[in-house]
Each structure stands twice: as structure tokens, then as C-alpha cells.
Image (tube, rainbow, N blue to C red):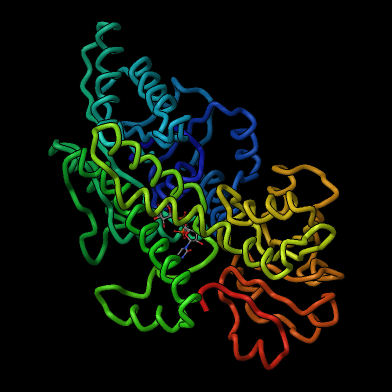
Length: 439
Ligand code: UDX
């Protein structure tokens, strides 16, 4: 099938590459000429396992094209995906200007019937706004063309995006049209084998499903972080509690890992946006507010522990920091807990020697060159001469470090672990001062 995807961001690019991989004829449109040129030259704007091979292979075979020419893009596909960003505006609501701009572009250039599919995470009611925008432009053009607007939210995780798209656990489609249902069935057939993963519903329910999913996951994490705070103060071990409750299938083991707070491009933004939606209709978002407040506090926990350990005297101290990205297998630094920590350490007059397997370039881009931040080539060199090690992200290569070497490199054998990577008993035997979360 001929498909057009507007917006070559995370969601758009992965979706386009995966659709091309199964044989669809996909054209990606973006306003960023540099990005389009880079992609044609095999330069991928994000780090995502498996994506580069997919993009290059399908570009070479001609199934995946990139252009800045919107008219060409609109002409190309009967299916028009909108996968542009919805950044929060000043009050935290999702800003729809890019989504509506694409709707306008489609309506301006279309010369045949289209199915417009919203992939961006958008507030409930956006489908109606897109429909109104397209109708308005078509009316002004005096063009009698048919179109449908449907909602098809994306549930991919960064670092596992290709796999999530290739093997989705569900495909949510909001539409009231039987024609759209048939077309979407055909489009997703390669991903819908063995058992039916497609869940059809109305547009508004599909839009809310996306927010509800992310907010539920964020709630699980904030709840566990709150339990961790309690466990710590009550002399319990949150890791034992986690196993104890996770074994109940009604609770489950997923997303109950306490840590130094959730970050990324979705949870913080989506919790805030749904909270705003609720407030706008005078419905009090009691739980969402608490989830957000707990997360803001949780991002301070590592700094508070460090500050307490050194009795507030951090000036002149140097901290090794392992892990900068908001989670492993990505270079994404958006809302990363490491940022809150580094900024607090700098504010207190301390220095940071950081190592991350992927996110150092991004860190450099955000903070520039500063004398209280040294980006180190290896995890060992980050330890050299530091007063303590702080762990913000659970990259696999941090799980089994050489503790003897660590003792040699660090000034003092102190670890602040925001991800509970090590066994406290083992650390005690190794004579480390080990401060983790909730234990
Ligand atoms: C999330 C959703 O998982 C995905 O379905 C949605 O489409 C987009 O948002 P992503 O932001 O890529 O994906 O990352 P995810 O793996 O969900 O982690 C989010 C944050 O929660 C990370 O900061 C992670 O460290 C944190 N987290 C996750 C915890 O602190 N504890 C957990 O148990 C799980």
C-alpha cells in the first residue's frame, strides 16, 4: 500500500521504516531539509537498535523515500500518517500547532480521497479538530473530496522501538468508518498474524487510551518510588517488597522498579497534558497530580542522599556519574534524572565526571563546555580521582563492574545508586559505603 508519513521524528521514522520493511511503499515528509538529506545519506537522527539497517535497506530498495516536498507527499499515499510532535505549551497542554499544520497541508494539496491517521499523542478531541481543519480548507478550495480521520496511537518504547513496532502487543485504531477498518486491517496484516491484535474503537477512546496507558505506567513507578521512601524509613528493603508484590499476577513484575524518577519524551509530558485536560473540564486530577509531584521529588532523592552524606558540604567535591540518558539503550536526555542531579551538584559547587555509552554527545549539546563537567571516554576513567560514584541509568555494562579496580580509582569507596544495581550485602563485604533507593 502507498503510505505517507508526516514528521520524521522518533515515532514517524520507526513506523515508516517498519511499514516499508514489510513491503509497503512509504514516503516520509519533513520540513527539515538537513534531516531529509542526512537520511538519504544513511545518517539516522536518533540512536535506536536495528533502525539504521532498516532505514538504509529500505531506502536502497526504494520502498522508503524522504522528501521535504509536502505536495509530493500528499499525492503519494492514500494513507496519510501524522506523526509530528506535540510539545507542551506554557501551561502543560499539548500544543497542536504542528498537527493542525499537517492537516492543513494535506487538505491544501489533496486531489483524491484520503485517510488521515493520527499517530502523534494528542488530547482527546484532536480528531475532531483535524477533521474541522481539513473540511475548512477543502470548502475554501471548493474541492469535493472525501476523507476520514482516524486515531492510531503508538505505544513504542525508546530503545526497543523497532521491535515494539514489528511485534506490537496491540494495535489501537479509533474510527467509525467500515472502510477505514478494512484498510487498516490490510495495512497492519503483516503485524497481526497468529492472533488478532487490532482493537477498534471510537476516535476519542483511542486518543484517551494512549494517555491512560502512559499515565498508568507512570503511576506504577511513582507508587513504587513512594513505597521505596517508606521502606527506607521503616527499615524494610523495597527490592524484597517489589518481588513480594510482583508475584501477584494482578500486580505483575513490570514497571514496579523504584529508581531516581521517570524521564523521557512521554511520561512527564503525557501526565502533565492529561492533568491539564482534566483541569480544563473542571475534573480534579488527584492521582495525576500526585504522580507528577512524587516524580519531581524522586529526581531530588539522589542529590538529597549525597548532600546528607557530606553534611551539605559539596563544594570542591568530584562525582563520577554513570548513565546520562533517561534510560538504557537510548541517547535521549529529555527530562532525564541525571540532569536534575548534575544541575544540583553544580549549584552546590561540585564537579561531575560523567560516562554514558550513547548520550555524551547529547549532553555536550545541552550543556556545552563547562569546567565542572568532564565527559569521560570510559566508565573507568570517570571514576579516576572522584570522591564517589553516582549511578543514574541502568546500562547493562554497569551491572558487573570490577569492584577492586573501582576501589583503586575512587578517592573514597562510596556509591550512590539510583537504580539498585548491586546487592547491598555484597557491597558491605566489599567494604563499600552503598546508598541505594528504598533499602
Ligand atoms: C514510554 C512507554 O513505555 C511507551 O509505551 C510509550 O509509547 C512512550 O513512553 P519510553 O519513554 O521510551 O516509553 O520509556 P520506558 O521504558 O517506558 O521508561 C520510562 C521511564 O520510566 C524511564 O525513565 C525509566 O527509567 C522509568 N522506569 C520504568 C522506572 O523508573 N521504573 C520502572 O519500573 C520502569
